[in-house]
Length: 132
Image (cartoon, rainbow, N blue to C red; front, side, top):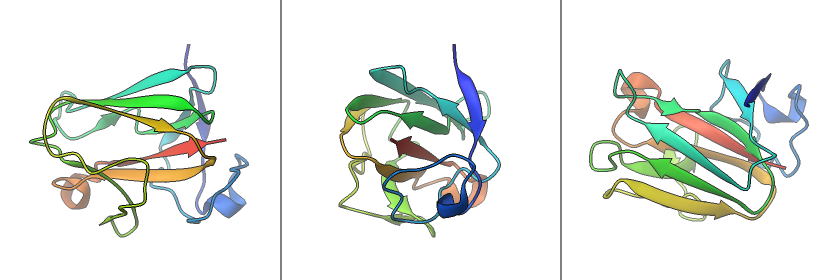
């Protein structure tokens, strides 16, 4: 059972305490942050009925959680990065432009933004993983 919590911007003043929040801002905005901290593996689907959404877009997990993105990366190339959406090669969420599944194990506490390189500007196809 998923529990939604709210994350306000910036993360330094969030209703949810975010350990290791070095970036200061998440892509969640008014989106609910789904508490997945009891899971060792989580899947974020994308494409959806409208074709341009992550589900769930914003999650909270424990360090060591394996997060799998599932969808068509040729249509929705994934990248980890920050606002404005800029690819961060040091992010544990690596740029992925092909295939239909990619798993990243998030070992360190922090706030990790990700986005679709093709649809972040027009459809705000982006999200945040809070590891704490």
